[in-house]
Length: 294
Image (cartoon, rainbow, N blue to C red; front, side):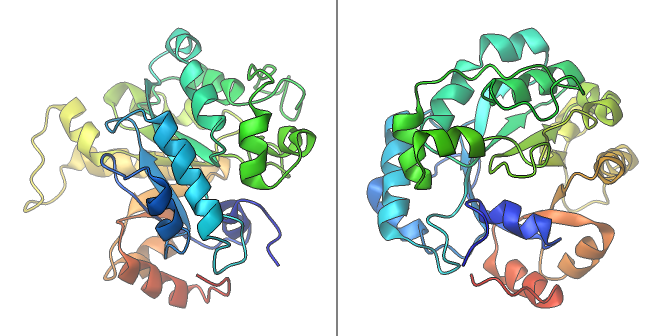
């Protein structure tokens, strides 16, 4: 039987890499697609709303389809769903003004949120606080202030997790700052300004994973991306800084992987795997002797 609601967290606790599917745009948010995705090969589903449609009605239907198509082969009620948000993490004020996005998305019963362009520690701190109920106190006074998520969405979000409203309030809290939390919050370091602050940003409690964004970092550095050429030294350094800051703070590092390099990337410390390829996951799971059913 599963030990957690969020199997991505369950796997990370066991030091198992997790593999996701779903792109930055175009994810079909319908009931039927949810039923189909309930048996996904991936460990979690990424829903891209940074560039895709901010479709709350569709997300409601999609989550309902995941429930009706489940449980997963691993025995979980649904696969975890993590949503990329349109808001940019450029400042604390910008996050506070746009925190309604997090509330709307969490009210649909998703299991995590990914903040893009996470440029400053204060922006990331505000992001974590905006996703928390103020009654949950782990980390408060030690890098975090009280949460600002208001009560009222539990009638729609708690049933998705199969919990009572009170149980949901206790469980929908960021891991690992709350060891019993089931909410996975991630950030993208994808601009020069974000890179400048990365060592400080990743000390903020409540971050469950972090990634570098090679596409946006190329643009931020003023470099035209050319996959046929070796990676520019500035991008090599950027990736190393994000990876090293993750390691220093015990935060899982997300990176793109393929079947031919997944073993080396795992050895290097990658624990959240982009690439959207089932064959990459198959190689990686075999390498780490994964036991949880897919």
